[in-house]
Image 1 (tube, one colour):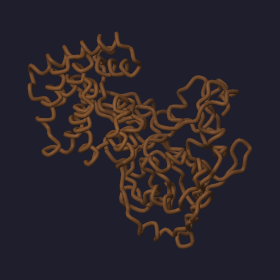
Image 2: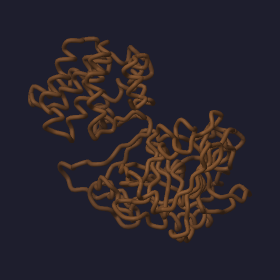
Image 3: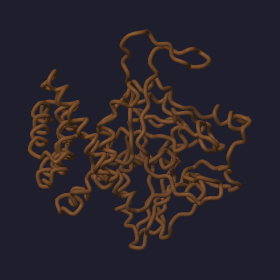
Image 4: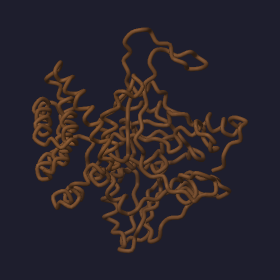
Length: 427
C-alpha cells in the first residue's frame, strides 16, 4: 500500500469513501448496530447470487469433500452470537503519512447479531488430513488489486478455524444477510478484524501449505515503510469510541454542549481479551489509575503496579465510605488489593461483590463480578479456587469462552493446571 502525498484526499479515495461507509457514532447507543448503520467495506463488486443454485464446497486436504445448499446449512443446528467487527484500516485517514486506501476516520466498526452454522463440526465431518495446516475461505467477489486478478480469499490456521468459534452466518440481526453483507453466506470469526470475515462465501479449502494469496501475503499487514514485509493483521486491538455529546455544527461536526453535567456513553471492544472496565479521564489523566496498574502488570513493571494499585485502593476505599454496597467498587478494590499482596482483604472484597450481585439474581452484571473474583484468586495464588469460580462462568452468557481463555494473558497463572487445560479444550 503506497503512501499519500501531502496534497490531500485523491479522487480515487473519494470514490472509495462514497462506495463504502462508516458507522455513525451516535449509533453506539444501540448494543446491536442496525444493519443500515453497520460499517461496510466492499473490496470489489457486490455479486448477484442465486440462492437456489449456490453451493458451499468444502474441499482440499480432507478425507470427505462436502457440498451444501443454503437450505442444508440452515437445517443444521444453529448458533447466534453478537460479534463486533472493525476494519483493520480504521483511523487510516488520520495517520501521517497516510496510506492510500479507503480513508476511514474512526467509525469503521459495528456489532451484529449473526446466526448460522458452526464451522468446526463441518470441518470435523470432512476429516482434515494430518498434514493440513490452514483453511482458506473464498468469496464470489472478484477484482484486481496490486495488479493481481483475484477472488477475495483469506486463511486461518486449522487450529483457529476449529477453536475460535467461527460461524457460517446466513442471518444478520434476525433477517437473511443483505447483499452488501455477504448474501447468502459469510464467515464470522469472533475477535478478528473485518477482513477475515469473508463475504459471499462459496468455497472452503483445507491446505497443507501456508496460504500465500494476495490478501494474506500482501494486503492487511502492519508495516512501518512500504519496503517492509510487515506482520499479518489478526485480532482486534483494544479500542473504544464515545457517543459525541450535545449537538453538532453541520459542516465541522464540532459539538455544542450545554453547561452543567454531561452524560458520557460509548462502547469498547477487543479481540485479544475481554473488556472488563473502561475509564474516562476528565481531569488530565488523573483518574486513569485502575487502567494503568493493570497495564503495568501485564508488562511486568512491579514498581508502577504498586504505585497505581495503591492510588486505586485509596480512591475506591473513599468511594465505598459513601456507597458501601457498590459491588463494582468492591470487586475492583479486591483486584487492587490482590496486586498489593493483601490476600485476605482482596478475597473478602471479591466475595462481597459476588454476594451483592450473584449470577443467580443478576445475570447481566453478576458474571463480571464473579470474573473479578476469579482474577483475585489467581493473583493471590489460589488456582483451585479460581477454577471453582471460572467453571460455572463458562456455562452462562458472558464474554468468556474457551477461545478467550486461550489468548487472554490474565489467565497465564492457570496455564499449567490440568483443569484449566480441559476448559480451554472445551471439555
